[in-house]
Amino acid sequence: MSGKDPSWQFGRAITRRPGKSITGGLRAVDTGAPDLSVMLRHHADYVATLKEAGAEVTELPPLESHPDAVFVEDTALCLPEGAILMRPGAPSRLGEVAEMAPVIRSLFPEIRQIEGPGTIEGGDILTTSREVLVGQSARTNPEGIAELAAILDGWGRTLREVRVPDGVLHFKTDCSLLDGDTILATDRLAASGCFEGYRVIRTAPGEEAAANAIRFNDLVLMAAGFPATARTLRDAGYEVREIGNTECAKLDGGMSCLSLRFQ
Ligand code: CIR
Image 1 (cartoon, rainbow, N blue to C red):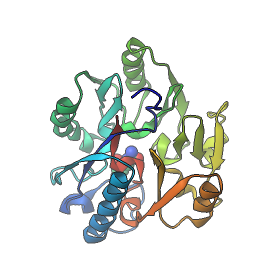
Image 2: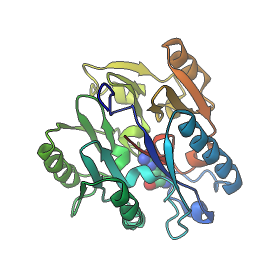
Image 3: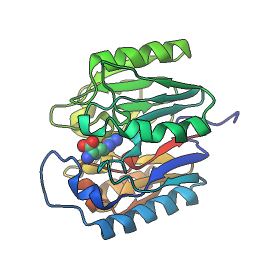
Image 4: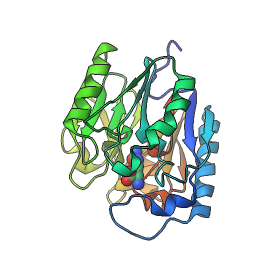
C-alpha cells in the first residue's frame, strides 16, 4: 500500500459484539450496569461507520466467558510487519488473547506474542507514522514494555515510553491519532510534554472523554456528546462521525477499544 500512512490508513478491522456478560465488565467507578440493547445499537453504528470508512470488518460473536471481550483493541498490536499478541494486566482479561489468537493467525503471516511476566494492553499503545508510543499505566508495566520494545526493535521500529496520568485507565483513554503528525489529547496528558514535535489538538474543557477517538481513512469516529470538541475537529478540516458511547463509557471504553485496525 505504497503512499499510504499505515498509522491511520487501513483496509481492515476486527470487532466483537458485546454479550450479556457485559454487565460484569471492569470499571473504575460504578455508574450503573450497561444496557446491552443500547450498547448493541451503538456497536452496530460503530461497525457501520467503519465500513463507511472503507473497512472490511471481521465481526466476531460475543464471548460470554469474558465480560470485557468487546474491547478487542487490548488483545493485540497490528502493524504492517506483523501482529503481536498482548498480555493484559487485568487478570480477568488474560484469556481474551487466546480467543483472539486464531483470528489474528488467519490474517497475519508474522505473529509474535508477549510471553510475560510483564503485562501490556493495546489501549496503552499509540502508533504514529514516526514511532510507537507506549504508556506505562496500571495495566502496562515496564517489563511488558521492554518485551514489546525488543520485538519492535527487530522490525526497525522505535518505541518511546511515556507515563499515563494517575487515575487514567490507558494512554489512549486520553489521546488519539488524527493523522501521521496530529494528535487529539486532553490537557492533562498534553501537559506532560509527551507530544513534543507533534501538532496537538486539545479536547474542550469538560470533554476529556472525547479524546478516545479513531481516525480510519477519511473519517474520525468520536463518541457522541462532546459538541465543542467535534466542532474543533470539523473546523480543523476533519470529517467527523459521532457515535453513541454511553454504555461503553460506563466500562471506561471508547472508540479505539472497540476495534483492531490494520491494512
Ligand atoms: C477494562 O477495564 O479493561 C475495560 N472495562 C475497558 C477497556 C478499554 N480499552 C481500551 O481503552 N483500549
